[in-house]
Amino acid sequence: MNEADAERIVYDRLLGPNSLSAQVRDNTFVDEAEVNELHRAITALTEFYRDRPNVPKSIALAFVDIAARFENHFYSESQQERLQDIGLGLGCLAEELFSDG
Image 1 (cartoon, rainbow, N blue to C red):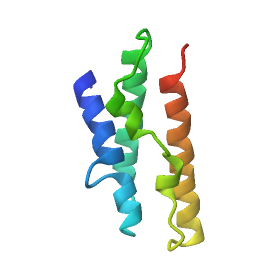
Image 2: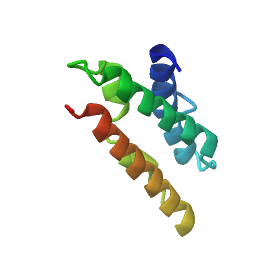
Image 3: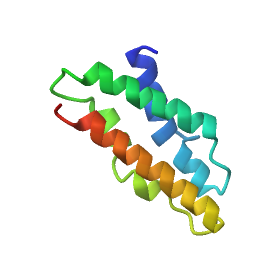
Image 4: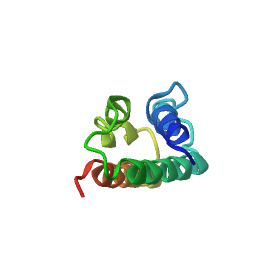
C-alpha cells in the first residue's frame, strides 16, 4: 500500500460519507473488512510518517474525537462493546501514529 492510498483509506473510513462512523450513526453493521483495511492503512501511515516531523492535517482531523464516533446506544450491549473496542483500538493506533518515536 502506498502513502496516498493509505491516506485515502483513513480519510474515507473515518470522515467520508460512507465512513465507519456513518455506519454506526445509521445503525448499520460496521463492516469488519473495512475496520481491518483501516488498521492496515494506519499502520502503513505510521511507517511512512515515522521520521517526519508532521502528519498531514487531513489525517490528524480524521482522528479528532475518534472514540465518540463509535458510540450508539441503540445497539445491543454486545454490539456496543464491539464498537467500543473498535474506537479504543483506533485510539491506540492514533497514539502510535502521532507519537514522536
